[in-house]
Image 1 (cartoon, rainbow, N blue to C red):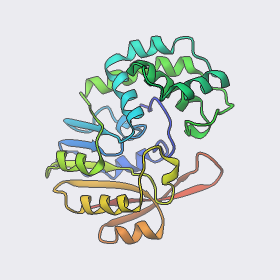
Image 2: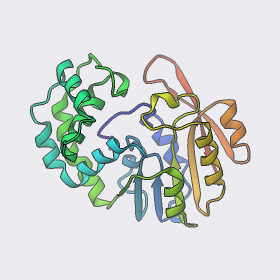
Image 3: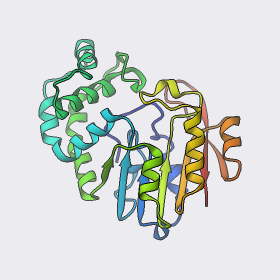
Image 4: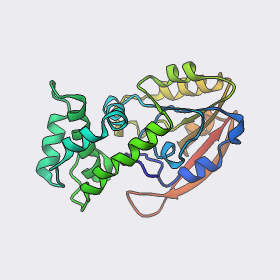
Length: 249
């Protein structure tokens, strides 16, 4: 199934390649998305493992996923009457960080901003045709996926979440902000964090698969691991985009 939203750096076009490269399913019983984002890889399968964990450092995103899982009907009611217009978008953007909103009100405004912004940047009105009614109805399907697999939704720093859930039978999928593109993300992630992620993953008992942009810094940082170059279509312009899939197995 698809994610309920699109985000910059989302893995819609690469998710099959990623899942095809996971180790045999019998070798892990817990699956952790460390940088959950829009969850394209999570939602690609009905269930990845006995225990599934979705984590992200972005509080707006985590709040949306929790509201979808536990309060989808209420979120749909809050979104009822919203339409694809610049005025609705600008109002939602201005209100999203206001004090006094409930979790559901905040989730609705964030959802609207992501659905109708340009390139899912959440900041600029997209000027495109979007059927919000279908997107709102689809939240019921997403809720069933999150509930049926009892997906744990976390809001932690990546180092903490990896250490908490690490086991020999754990599989971590990591899709961090890409090197030199960190400014496009709402949560700060600098060069020291890239190095901290490498050091954390190098010490785990379980397995990891990491997706990154293909540049010399990343290749050098993970030179001790298996690196595979892949290409995908660029969803913001014509042409292709080079990426790396890095594993410790």
